[in-house]
Structures are given as structure tokens and as C-alpha cells.
Amino acid sequence: MSAPGCRRAVCPVLAGCAILLAACAPAKHTEGPEALCPHAGMAFIPAGWFTMGEDDGRTSNQPQHLVYLDDYCIDLLEVTRQAFINFLDESGYQASGWLSPDTVLHPDLPATGVLWEDAHAYCQWVGLRLPTEAEWEKAARGTDGRRYPWGNDWDMHKANTAESGVGGPVPVGSFSLGASPYGLLDMCGNAAEWVSDYFDPAYYSASPDHNPTGAILVLDHGLRGGSFASPSDQATTYFRDSSHSSQPNPRVGFRCAISIVK
Image (cartoon, rainbow, N blue to C red; front, side):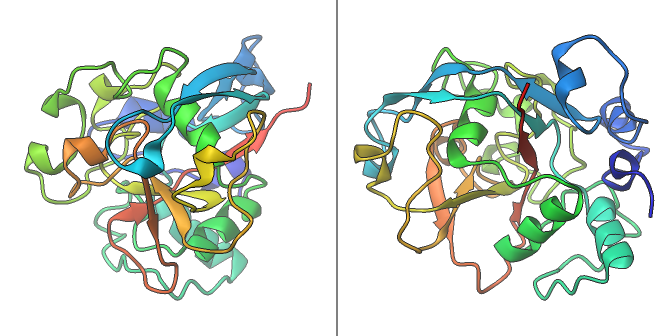
């Protein structure tokens, strides 16, 4: 079995190469905060408060409230098809929802058509987990309450959404101008992303303000960020969505996270 950092990414020949090369590099030996992350290709998100939700749009986005999260790390990029294939080949895991037969031709596209259970299994295999909904939003939004990862003004050149007209996923990291405050890419568009939480549209009215982990009642699992088919108002940093896990969705992918204990 290859080292965890190398089995999770493939170095592409298309856009985003420099970032993906970093993702498949050996473990880092730096003195910066990312040195606390167990794998290369992750961003360190420091503990603190941030603004979650928004007082407009769907009622499930409301009310806006402050949330405190402990330190954690999260992938800079969505998990690629090649990384997911490596997982299947090396672990023997059977992913019933896998819908990407063209992985050989497009290894650096996001791993879409992956059921929540399959995404969860992949993250466990690499020693990580799916991010909570709150962790996902802070990594996308930062602490200033911005609407999009790059700021408050929509720009179709910074994300692969319905407005871009691409009509399908692109190699992860292609929209480099759309980086979040912590350097994450594709937090708006490309592939919608699974989070660990069960989805409850009324959860914000009763959620704890420290490290919320989602509803106890088992409903659908949460999705964040919107996909290549989502309009911009459904690909904001705060828009909440959900999906049944029984059927694979070719618009849905994921990234991994981990708690950091200093």
C-alpha cells in the first residue's frame, strides 16, 4: 500500500497541476500551521468563532449565528477519481454507487457518483473523516461572513456552476481564482460535497454554538457547495442542501477532514 499522501491524488496534465502535485508530495516538514495536518494537501483551520448561516433565502439557512470550532484540517481539493480508484483497488471495498467508468481518461476529475457511505469509507481508509457541516462552512467562508469563497460579489470566472456553461465537472483546482480564505478550491461549484451531518432544515434553531455535529434524527445527509449544475444562489458558502444516500448522484463528491489535538 502506498503512503497516504500519495494514494489520495494524481498529478494531472491539465489546470491545477501545481496544487495537485503538492497533494501527492511526501509528508511535509514545515514549521507552519499546516505541519499539524497528518497529510500533505490539507489546510489547517485554527480554532475560533465564525459566522454560520444567513438571514435570507431558504429557511434552512437561518438564522445566522456564531459558532466556535476547535482546530481541524481539511483537504484543499476534492477527492479525485484516481484517488478513489486507488482506494477501491487497494482496500477491496465495493462501492455500489461508483459511476465513473472513464477514470483512466479523466483521473483528476472529482470522484462523483459516490454514496455517502462510500465517501465515509474512503475517508476512514486514509485515516481521516468527512467534515462536519460547520467545518465545511468555516473553511469555505472564513470569519468575515462572506457569501462566496472569494468574497461577496458573484464572478462566473471563479467557479464551475450553471452560469459558467461548462455543463460537467472539471479537474479539481481548475478555478484557482475562487480560493477560500484558507486556500481551499471548488468550495463553490464543480461537485457538491458530502458532509458528515444528518440534515435537518430546522437544525440552526437549536444547534449548539461549540463544535456542532448535526441532527440526531436520521434523515438525509447534508450536501454543501453546489455543483456544476447549480445556480450561483445555491452555491454560496452558507446554502444548505441534502440528498438521499440510496441512489448515486453524478453531481456529488467529497473531501476529507480531521480534528487536531495539539
